[in-house]
Image 1 (cartoon, rainbow over the protein chains, first blue to last red):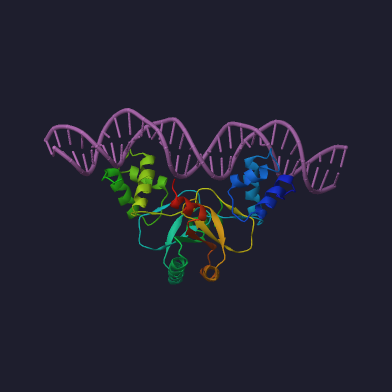
Image 2 (tube, chains in turn blue, cyan, red, purple):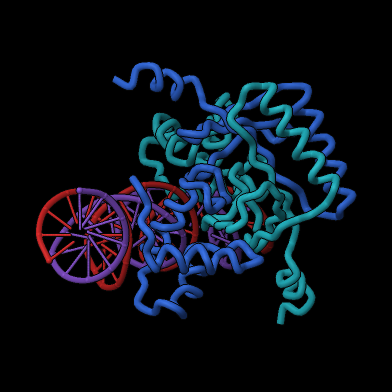
Length: 133
Length: 133
DNA sequence: CTCTTTTTAATAATGATTATCAATATTAAT
DNA sequence: ATTAATATTGATAATCATTATTAAAAAGAG
């Protein structure tokens, strides 16, 4: 589907690009509203989504929508399925090594912590790719 | 507030610990229901939250609830405020270096990508700490 | 211009999570 | 053990972010 060149779309991208910060949809909505007062919040959501599919905007927050919980508290690392959001543990020496580095770096920078997740497609989602029924 | 030792809490933790996977609250609810059929979904949510505050459970999904968007698409890196969720860019050579390593590692493991965010408290939240009025 | 497709504003619907609250269970104090 | 104080529960309503719906308007193609 080809994106047409609407005023709303143009202004949304233009205003987003002006910002140093990384706004939520409703924050950007408030800003765009100053130029197009009757614009709808849904339009902002819709266009941010389309623009990020088209690679003109970066959508942070790549994780899925539901929270997930882990009964193991010792430090270990995770891969999240890029399509269904399921999370599995990963035991790979290099992954462990990068996390160690991050521990040190975060300490050095005096920060609170970090959040690293690898992304891949899980078994189940790959199977679906093969036979999409 | 001290946690009391309820059946529900015990079973929730016990079942979560049995799992290799990292369930969502409602997935765990279905499992726990087999042992306590009348348990409420809210109880599962409540206890997962309390247990993770107490450090007995890990809450994945550290990112905030609202999505955030970025008008700059070139690769660059982010710090998220641990308390309010705001995101800022970070330009630090070592952070850039770790990300480069991750690019290589992810490529080598044949994965789709990764998601790394540093966590800290932003200016605004620090100010609030000082004078909590 | 005219037809087709896409987009819009307004608003309803959804899904995940959190809040409320009266009844019950747990803990602490006697 | 009994009682008083506190914490928790199940049920359900409320909230919040996001997505879907829809009729009308705008954009693009010919």
